Image (tube, rainbow, N blue to C red):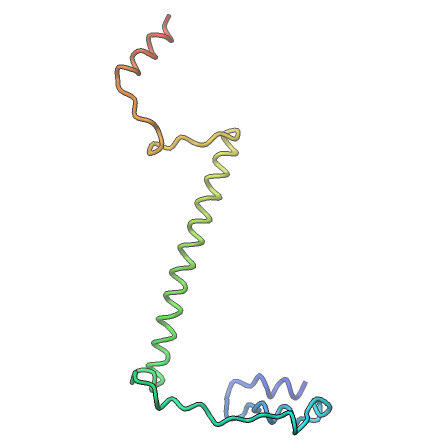
Length: 121
């Protein structure tokens, strides 16, 4: 549990690196020096956007990406809810599709009057 606690530490200055974790006594049997590969730290100097070089820039880019994802997901959820509500209305109508105003066929007053006359006969 001590290793897990150190691995999940929020402060990166106090968190173990992957190499330190592999050298921990708990993982001693899994660690083999000959299999170990190391690489230099990732260099962001090539980055052409100055915004990403600051904490605020990174936060802003993350916020923008998450906001776009949220909007896309929100629209998908709303579409699913509408379909579910439509199915529930159909079920309540005995399996028939509901006749919303926008889906009704336009009938002229001539046809409506003819239907009324048939009913009165």
